[in-house]
Image (cartoon, rainbow, N blue to C red; front, side, top):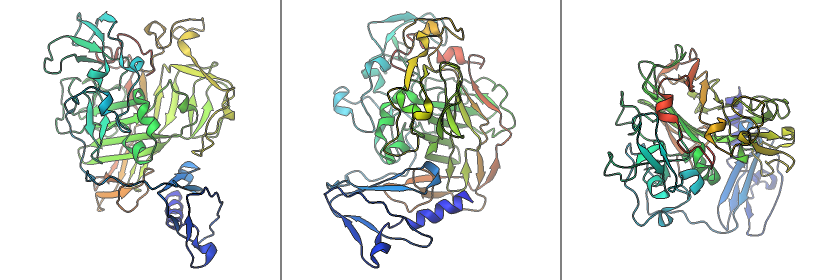
Length: 474
C-alpha cells in the first residue's frame, strides 16, 4: 500500500502549482519566493524556474507527502562534454592523477583530512596479516588518491582500498604505508584482499554515487564512513573464511556498500545514507532511509524504525536500519547494520534533534557527541582518558555486523533495467536518475541471520587492524 501511495503522489508532483491558476503556469524569478501549496486528490500542476534550476527535497523521508522545491536563482548550465554512462564502474583502480592531489579534487573526489589518511612521520611494525613483521609508515594523500573509479555518470569517485598498501604502486613487494581508516571487506573485484574466489570482473563501489545524484556532497567528504560487506558463494565472508551463523540466506557472491560512520555529528540528524548492492545479475544504488534517531540508553528520540545511537548510559553496539526498496522489485528487508565500538556517543537529549530530512534538520548545542575513548576503556565503566581513536581504548568503529541481511527479489518475468530516483522510486531516465539492474527472478533471502565482521570472524585480525588507530575518525 505504501508503494502505491508514494507512486500516486509522485505523479501528482510532476508539476506543482498550476491548478491554483487554472491553466496558468507559475514561473519563479531570481527574487526569493516562499509558498506553501497543498494538493488534493487528483490535482497536479507545473513549476518552472525561469532563471536557473529547480532543486527538490523530500521533507519527510520515505513518506513522500511533503516536497520542497527551490529555484536556484542563477542559471546552472549542465555539463555536456562527458556523456552520461550507464555502465558499471571499472573493476581496477585507475592510475594516480598526475600533478598531486590539489588539481584533482572535485565534488565527487573531495580532499580528505590528513588525520583520516595518515601521518608519514609515524612508523609501526605489523604483527598480523600478510605483511606480518614488516615496518610501515603512515600514508599520505599521494597513496590515497591512487584508489578511485569512474561512476555510472563518468565522474571520478573514491573507492575501497586496503589498510596497508605499497608506497610505490609499481613495486608491490616494496615499502608499505598504512591508512588511519578502513572500508571493511575487500569487494570481490579488488586487489589487496583475501586471495580466494576473487571476481576480477566485479566493479568497485563508487563511494557516494547516490548521494551525489541527490546533491548530498557532504557525505562524500565524510569518506571514512563508507563500509563494504562481501559474501562469497560457498558461505565465505569477505576475508575468505567461513561465515559465522550466516544462515540459509542468499549464497551468491555479492557485496553491500553503505555509509555508516560513527564519529561525525551528522549521524544524529541525517537519515538518508548511500547504499549499493552488487551481485553477478543485480546492481542497485539508492539512498537508504535509516529512520529517526533514538538515544540508546535513555530511549529518548523519535519513533522506530530509527538509528539507535549510543549514549553515556549505553556506549556500545549502535544499530542502524537501512531501508531500501528499488522499483518495487528489490528490497533490503529487515537488514540492520550494527557497530560494536562506535567512536563517540551522545551527551544530552536526542529527542531535541530533528531528523526529518528538512532544511531544519539538526541538533541544538546541548546535544553533543563525546569521544568514547576518553570515558570508557574497552567495555569497562572506568575512565580511560585515551586520545580519540586510540587503539588502546578499543573505540575505533571497525567491529561490525549486519543483522538479517535478507535481500529479496520480486522481479520474475519483468524488465531488468530501469531508472529510479535516489529513493528507489521509478522515474524517467535522465541526468538526475539512477540506472538500476535487477535480475528477472524471484529470490528470497529471508533466512539469513548475520554477516559477522567482528574479532570473532575468521580473517578479521589479518585485514582489519589499524596500526595507527583512527585519530581522524572511522
